[in-house]
Image (cartoon, rainbow, N blue to C red; front, side, top):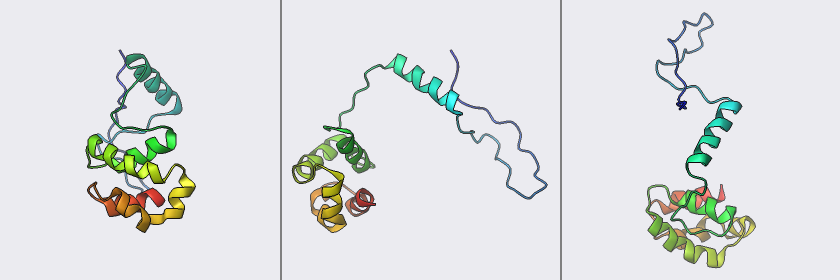
Amino acid sequence: MKRFVKRVSRPRKSRSGAAARQRGQAKPFSRREAMLFFEHLKKRNPEPQTELVYANPFTLLVAVVLSAQATDKGVNKATEALFKVIQTPQQMLQLGEEGLIPLVKSIGLYRNKAKNLVA
């Protein structure tokens, strides 16, 4: 089985003064390598599940943004109230950061999360 970690050789000395890669820092996947990686994940888990409750890609994105440093249970509680008020990105932008704060206040870091949702 192929491992999906790219190894980095020793850093080269740059004559132009550009910073050389630090030893051990991973290089980004090429497009081909990324496709192979996702194919591998799909074979291992063809139907991944999450505990986050969502109805469409937009609501999933919102739930994921809110999930940083929070439990899925707490996020689901907040999104239940949030999605009664907001169903589209346009509605979220109209409500704005200050309007979102009371709806996501039950989650930690709610001010930053409200800011990130409208960013």
